Image 1: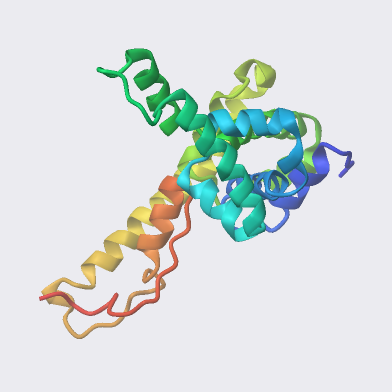
Image 2: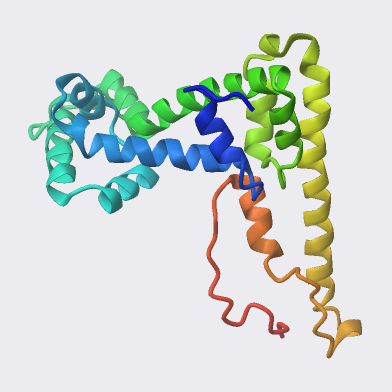
Length: 239
């Protein structure tokens, strides 16, 4: 498989053939961005202007606190809070709310610098995946060997740059549907089997057949997020 600066990260995330490769790609991109924001980008004026205006969602604030130094996070928050104070919530409030400022505050609450950047980068990565799938037989085989494509990234892969796939769109759709749909059917069967183990007709049976984690796997497939379960009391029959 011929590699270049664009294909190397794609090959890296597809090679393990475990879970959804696009989720691994997302995780890699957002971790790199969180490390960048709390590292070398912290003192770049152009970046700070954007982070002051856009802020971050809880997921990415949490990631920044976990990955970056506390002083870095504090400095980012200092200027972001100042921006909010000046633009939306001044110390001395006017007699009535300013509709434009309230609309701006609503937009800010639902905005995130890393989410915006991640969306753009994931769309770019999808275009590279499409190109590699069309032009590199070895990658096409690797793509087909994936465990599954989660629901969110099934949508992304099929809706970003459809024109770029051209005449290959139908074949790519069929292969991606096989990965997503096949795993979806397995999840349905596993969840059904898990539920059936609590039926009175199966009382005393402990044959979960590998479906004990079907709840966590289903949520990961539906949302792209991983739930860690401690297993305490998970499989006791409810009263």
